[in-house]
Structures are given as structure tokens and as C-alpha cells.
Image 1 (cartoon, protein in one colour):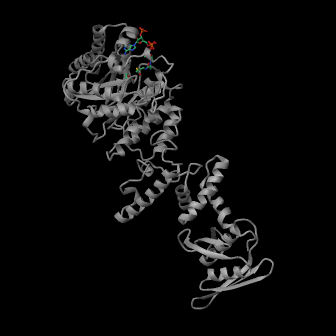
Image 2 (tube, helix red, strand yellow):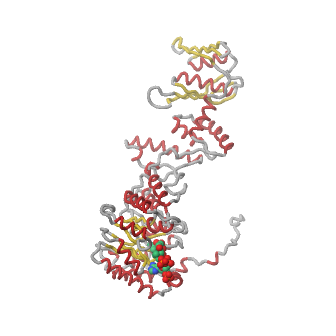
Image 3 (spheres, rainbow, N blue to C red):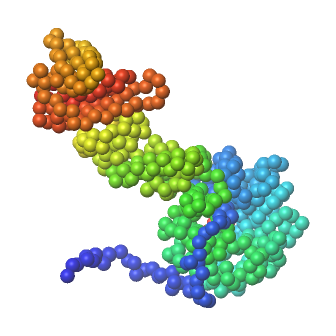
Length: 569
Ligand SMILES: CC(=O)SCCNC(=O)CCNC(=O)[C@H](O)C(C)(C)COP(=O)(O)OP(=O)(O)OC[C@H]1O[C@@H](n2cnc3c(N)ncnc32)[C@H](O)[C@@H]1OP(=O)(O)O
Ligand SMILES: CC(C)C(=O)C(=O)O
């Protein structure tokens, strides 16, 4: 019997932890709806980089960086933006005052100001939002048992009262102001569902939510503790049981402690969430808030309008990296430097064929390539959609094959190598990359190709040569060797005449395959010719380049002879 599982018990103390389902039991009422749903429209995205993201930075943003990130988020199309915790720091307070200046916040953008459920902090929050035309005041308190017992020192009833008192104060201060309300039961995902539901429903009533002035209940996975399906069950439970459902915007706020923040957000949307809070590229406490860029581009890749402009992903990334002083990793979905790049041979081959197929399909449909349906293997979206070009799509190292090498020589140097030459050159490249262990650039590939097939060694050759068509189908070749000796031959074409001349000098050449093409478009363009020849019993390739096709062809034959015959011409 095959011993398929040879793993040994770990020495690590996993028994210290309890599974999430033992800590929070989600009451089940009826069949789950979320597993069979599909996301067909974007939720309302709310970036919290200027608050949750900012509080997680070693060096919080200065006013200039905050403003730069806010302006970027407006340009990207966000319509609700959490801008800070104004009662916590002067900087955030002043930032809200700056935003209250006329014309700074566009008319269709709402700012969100965050506060803990503490009287002095709430007062200060309302001072900070004076004059803003449209604000959400976002009140939070942790509700999970460990936080109630260990951090806040309140039982369920005390804490409920504390929250309702704070919410009442918020309502009083908001009277007559253009303010809507948001409540976050921090650590919702570790809170008893019946308790959090009761608190949320109390607030819906206290704030007198209506379809015209809905409240936001934002249900955070403050610390991600379970597989995403558990979070989805928790959200669906709330979605089904919240009072005045048409007057509540159900929002989620996943973190990424288990690396599944994106999955949690997506399943939560299937389960009834209408609004998602997160950060650009997933900055935020510990492992980060859910990444809004990934979420939006996941929708884009499914044919759903993400309702955000991500067409210049590198420009967005530069601003975010500047503001956070944190790099976006090379493998970050959609935005990392390497995410549209293939090094491996079979992937490159498939991408090269896919891109050629895509170009042909676009031409067939009569649409520009950037409008044609996208089905290129290994590339979930067209890099051009996010402002990337194809230059970095294929890069060559020791893992690469002929497809990638041919693609790079084609895309960057205008060469269209015959298939057998691709195979031949691939072995040359493999030796070079195995020896160096490094990537080889398109420029170095061209140099290697040139040195191998176009100018292989310094073995002498013709000082001058000419061909003539002496009669229809009768060609003559005459070449003067560097030694001064003259070789002559005749044949039914210039290359067979050249072969006859070389045979007269004791070099037997049989041209097995010949191909040529222009290297770029327009007059004065260069031609390249490829010749596979058998020279004295050895078969191989040579190539020639010139503005004249005939000269390129003769050079290709001579290059093959130089490579394959011990004495050359
Ligand atoms: C999940 C989240 O991201 S929540 C947001 C967290 N963000 C931040 O903390 C960033 C900004 N915070 C701050 O600048 C400060 O914490 C302040 C100004 C808000 C408060 O500062 P301090 O008064 O010095 O309190 P401290 O920072 O030690 O916070 C702990 C206190 O807040 C209380 N607290 C925590 N959450 C809440 C809440 N939602 N409502 C009321 N009180 C709360 C704790 O019980 C504790 O009170 P205690 O000192 O009486 O035991
Ligand atoms: C308080 C909420 C919104 C939060 O930041 C969290 O739980 O992570």
C-alpha cells in the first residue's frame, strides 16, 4: 500500500486555540443563499486608508500626504471616503477643517469621520465637521466577549447602554446638520450574533433610519479568525434579521489576518453586504485591511463594472507608496511588478500564441485590440486595461523556452524565426542562462542571436561578390576571397550559384530551408534571411541582415558555412 501521507504531527502547540465555530455559533434559519449567488454589480466602496490605514503606519501621514491620497481617491471615483479620527489627533482634526473649505470636497463625495463611543471624543468630532456639506459620523465600540470582559470591563447590558447613550449624543449633536450615521460593532465576527443584532436594531430605531436617510451598520472582521464561509454565514444572518432592512446599508470591513480578506469581502457581498470598507493595496492594521484594488479588478475580470478608474495602476501605486511609505510587493494581485510577467517556457509559449490570436481576432472583428474580447492564457486581464504595456509580459531566464525567446525577438527586434531555428537558438540561450543563472534581456538575446547566427566568428570571407542573371532561370555568382582568389559558380538561383562556387573551393553546401522577411515597415527597412544548410555533412543555421534581400540571403549562407565548416569560406 502506498504510504501517501508521511507527515508527522507538528511540535507546535495548536491545541492552545479554539476553532471559530466553537466561539461564535451562527443560528441557521433556512438554506444558505450566498453559495449560489453571483456578484453582478459593484458594492459601494469606501476607502479607509486615511483612518484605519493611517493608524497602522509607523509614521502616520503628514497633511500633504493625506491630502494627496484624498485627491487620488476622489479622482479614482470613490464617493464615500473615511478621512480620519478627528478627535484622536490635531492633525486629523485640522485635515477635516481643511476639507470643510469651500470647493475642496466635490459635491458628490461624502466624507466619513470616525469616533469612539466616548462623550468628549464625540463632541470634538462634531466640532471638526462644521461646515461640511455631507458627512457620515462613524461610531464604534468593540462588542465581542473578550473585549467586553478584558478591555472595556462591561457586561452585555452595560455595554449596550454605553453604545445607546453615545448614539443618542450623536443624534442630538447632528440635529439640523447634513449628517448620516454609521455604527461598527468592532470585532463583530467574534461577537454573539443575537447580541450584535439587538444592538444594531436598537440603533436603527434610535437614529430613526429611513430609506431616505439610511443608517450604515458596518460589520468588521477586525481580526480575521475563520474561513470566509463562516463570515458569509454571519453576514447573511444579519442581512436576514436586521430591522428596517431597506433603511440599513449593510457594510463590511474585513481584515486579512488569515490572508483571506478578499474572499471574506466577496462572500459577504454574496451574503447581502452592500458596502465594503478597505484600503488601497491592502494597507492597514497588522496584515492589512481588505484590498479594494484587488476586489475592484476581480469584478472587472468577470465583466462587472468596478465603478472605479484603475486604468493607471502604476500611477495610483506610486501615490499610495509615497503616502504610506510602504512598497507594494512584486506579486501583489494586478499591481505588482511581476504579475503580468511569465518566465516559464510553456506559459510564454501560450501567452505568445494567445497574443497573436488576440490580434488576429481584433482584426477580424474590426475593433482595436484593446476593445476585443480577452482570452489570453495565463493573463486574467489585459495588462493594457490598467495601463501596463506588453514589454514585461515575457522575460527570459533558464526556465524559459523557445516560445518566449521567439516572442521577445519578435516584439522587440522584429525577427520572425522559423520554428526549427527557434528550437536551435533556445538551446543556445539555455546554455547561456544556465551558465549565468540570471535573466537575459531582449537586448542581450539579440546580441547572442547576432553573435551566433549573423556574425559567427572571424573566419574570413568574400572581400567582394556579385551575382547576375545571365538568362531566365540561369544565375552566376562570382566572389573574391580575402586572399584574392576568385570563386565562380552557376545555378538556377543566386543561392545555388553561390553553393556551386563554394563547392568549387571544396565546401559542400546544401541549402535545406530558406526564409526571409522585412524587419520593420517602410522604405529603407532592413531584411533578414535565415538559412538552414547542410555543410560538409553538418546541419545548422545561419542568418544575414541587410537592406537588400539578396545580400541578406548570401550573408545567411556564408554565416551558416562559417558556423558549420571547420575552415569556413
Ligand atoms: C479597530 C480599530 O481600528 S479601532 C480605532 C483605533 N484607532 C486608534 O486607536 C487611533 C487613535 N487613537 C488615539 O489616538 C487614542 O487611543 C485616543 C485619543 C482615541 C484615546 O486615547 P486615551 O484616552 O489615551 O486612551 P487609550 O489610547 O489608552 O485607549 C484605551 C481606552 O479607550 C477605551 N476604549 C476603547 N474603545 C472604546 C470605545 N469604542 N468607546 C469608548 N472607549 C473605548 C478603553 O476602554 C480604554 O479606556 P481606559 O483607559 O479607561 O481603560
Ligand atoms: C472599528 C472598525 C471599523 C475597524 O476599524 C475594525 O474593526 O477593524
